Length: 395
Image (cartoon, rainbow, N blue to C red; front, top):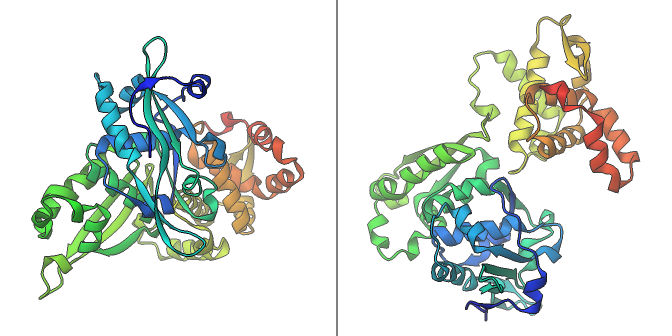
């Protein structure tokens, strides 16, 4: 049972430092954490959950014990006043969360997601929240490469207003690697936990569901987050609106338009795109977390491939390189090199001012840099990456 009442700090809590919060912090939410957690949260509780996730390092399970200042939480939530009683009520929602798992006997168990979710105060009367995931739940928070995860910045969910908007955003993040997909109307209602709403029957009609939930959620997501999406609905004749099918299309991610949404009447461009996708093993390497980066790389490779003036030059690390030389180099790029460039761009994206120039240079140097990186000790990788290129070359 989680402790949920405010109290003075104990010895353990007094030795822990308060987490440093930033809306720019990244969140890695595992697929099992998305799929198996039971409970409908308020918008505040969803945001508090994401604030906690933004404080942990999914590579280090000793970061699961987090202390957060109440004033920092209220700042993140955009609240001028946040009573301690309100903090406790919101924290209680997290404390009550369960997840379902199977033990060695293959019996299903419902266990607490968190072992600690409670408020305390220090000697100065400053209020903090102590949150720690349970030992049983650690596999849902850490070593996420083995179970799959979605990744997004904290500021996206903090910008949304309702629990439906947040739940819809998480659903779109989970599905975005598909770029375009269909889902049944009834299945989408389950995603949004509408089957547990007190007035559930009022959402049986698609028209009412769209007016009250879907349309305002998508509008808010398009205006306030890194995703841009459109949707359409098709009723199934003779079976009622509850049996209809929705089609979602991701238009852009982080301001980058997906390759499929670039309107082109040039069949040669389409041929170039397909050839490059086959060359780099596009279908094998793309996933929900790198799709926008891989698409950007394909677009740049297509532009170079289709360039007519092969004698003109592009600056690579302050050296002019002929287009013909770039074309030859790009025809040899492998899937490993594309993934390498994706990781480098993701690591340095906040510093990059000219994305096209940066990615073009990284692609040109990818084969050589990848070989050099493999020769470097693993602990020196970050220093190596930061020192190899001057970002001034890409401004």
